[in-house]
Image (cartoon, rainbow, N blue to C red; front, side):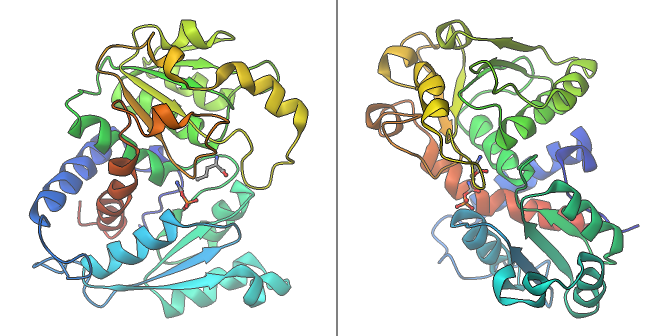
Length: 308
Ligand code: CP
Ligand code: NVA
C-alpha cells in the first residue's frame, strides 16, 4: 500500500521514533561532508520528488531539495501558479499525471482536503508540506531538536504561546503519539483545532488551555511560538492586539525552566511574537531546528518509500 504522510498519525509513534533515530544517525554521519554530497548508501538513488507550492516557502523548499540530493535522488519545484493546476486542471488529474512521472509528491497548499484528494488519486507517496490545518514535517524536526538538546520526550512539558494554528495542531498530535504534555496559552477566539486536542488527550497526553502566558510557561522545558498571522490569513490589527500579551520575551522566558529551549519554525516576525533577545539568546535552538528540517525530512522520505 502507498504510504502517505499527511499527518503524523499516518506514521504513528513507532515509525516516528524510527524516523527520529534515523535522522540523528544520518546527521552525525554527515559532519564535515559538503552539503550537496550524497550519503554513501544513496538510499533514494534515481528517485524524483515533485514539490507543488501554492504558498511561499524557504525552508521546506530548500530542505526537501537538499534531502533528496543527499539521499541520491533529486527534486523539482512546481509553482502552482505556473502550472495547469493554477489554471484549473483538477487535483485528481494532476495526481494521475504526476504519479506516472515522478516517484513522490510534496504539496504545500491552503485546504487540507486538497492534499487528501491528491493522496487519494496518487499512486505514489504524497507528503503534506503545510496546509492551513497542519505542518507535520516541521514537527519531526522540532522533536529531533528537543532530543538533541538532551530532553526526553515522554513527560516533557512544552508551552505554546500565541495563535492556535497549523503548527500547534501537529505539536499536539506529536504529544499524543510521543506522550508529552502541551500547555497552550492563546487569546480567546484563537483556540487550537480541538480534533487534534481530543485525540491527543485520548492517547494520554495532558493538553491544557489557558489565557495566561505566564501560567503556561511556568517551569516549562520547551517554549514554542509562531507567527501571529499565518499565510493566507488576513493581517488584522485586532488579532495583533489580542496576541500581544503572548509575546515571548525575556521576562516571560524567566518563568520557564532555567535550561528551557526556545523553538520557532520560522520565519519569525521579530518584535511581534518573539523579541530579538529571546530568538538570538541562550535558550534559542531555532537554527538547529531549521537545519534539522533536512535531516528529519530525509527520514520522512525514507519512511514513505518503505525503508523505515
Ligand atoms: N518553517 C517552514 O516551513 O518554513 P518555510 O515556510 O520557509 O518553508
Ligand atoms: N503558521 C505558519 C507557519 C509557516 C511555516 C503559516 O502557516 O504561515
